[in-house]
Structures are given as C-alpha cells and as structure tokens.
Length: 205
Image (cartoon, rainbow, N blue to C red; front, side):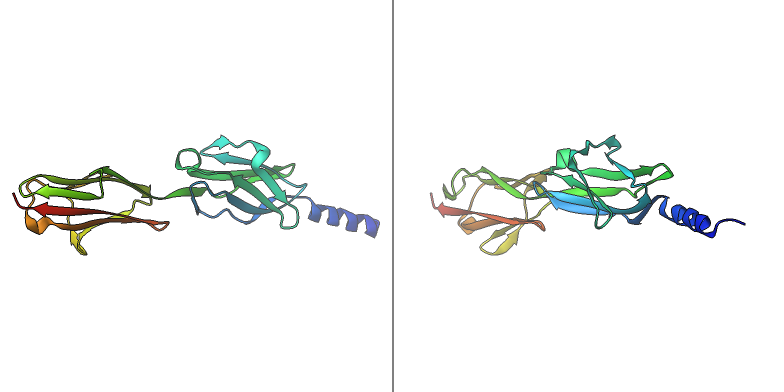
C-alpha cells in the first residue's frame, strides 16, 4: 500500500508547479502622450516564477525598465519619455519557466502629440495693404492625431487656397476693401487647441 501522505504531497507539488499562464493580457492598443511615461502590464500565473522577456518591434528590451509586482503577479514594462520616433510600435512579452513558455498578445502603442502651430507668413499680426496688393497667410500645422484646421474671417469660414502636407496657405492676388477683417486660424486635436489671428487693413489707392 502507498503511504497516503506521500501521495498527497506529490499531488500538492503537481498543483504548485505550472507552466506560465497569462491571466490578464496586454491591451491590444494603448495610447500615451509624447513625453508622458506609460506602463504596460500583463498578469501571469506559473511556478517556478516565469522569467519575462519583453520585445519592441521584435527587438529584445533591456531589463532595467521591467518590474514584477509580487502582489498582483504582474509583469510591468515602463516606457519612459515616449516619442513617436522611439516608442511607437508593437510590444509583446514572452514568459518562460522550466515547464514551458507562453507569449502575450501584441500591444500597439500610439504616441499622441499636441497641436503645433507655426506661422510662416505674414511676420506681423496686423497687415496694412493698399487695394490691388497681394495678401497671403501661410501656416505649418503639426500634431498627432492630425489636427482639424479651420480658417475664418470675421467668424465666417473661408477655404484655404492650398494645403500641402502640414503647410496651409490662404492667398488673395489683389486685395479689395471687402477682404479687410480679422483672419483666425484654429487647429485642434484631442490633446490641444491652438489659435492665431491676422488682421488685414485695406486702404484705397
């Protein structure tokens, strides 16, 4: 007859040893703001405690930004000071112990940027022109997501003459008195809104 205690111990031991099992997956998508740290988390069961290797676009990540939270059985990756160029892409983690390994679902990190508005012309906020002279407003508008850009004159929307990439241009070859007014450019995305005004004064010849 087997010693009942021996059998029980053996069973308990089998329960304790287990290949890694992910109990809370990485999110499929994560958003952060440029420069704002973000932590990716995955909860895992397994014994012995699994080793974690994180990857960014299939390149292994150095361990200094990786933590394990004992209480939650959670593996954490801190993405510091993220930028579009250095941090945007796909993250995943492989968890491994003596009994096996498992891989998380990939998480796509998007880095958002506030609106950046740069006026290329005119150099002044107030422009004085004579009838028949040319007038041009030119702006570069950046940001992520791409900002919604609107130009108004005295509160009424006017169409840009051209939009090429980030450059937005409104031009009048020969100004008339009715072109006089305040032109306001508004650019907004979900992070921020930027505005700038140009006042045009038109005088007769």
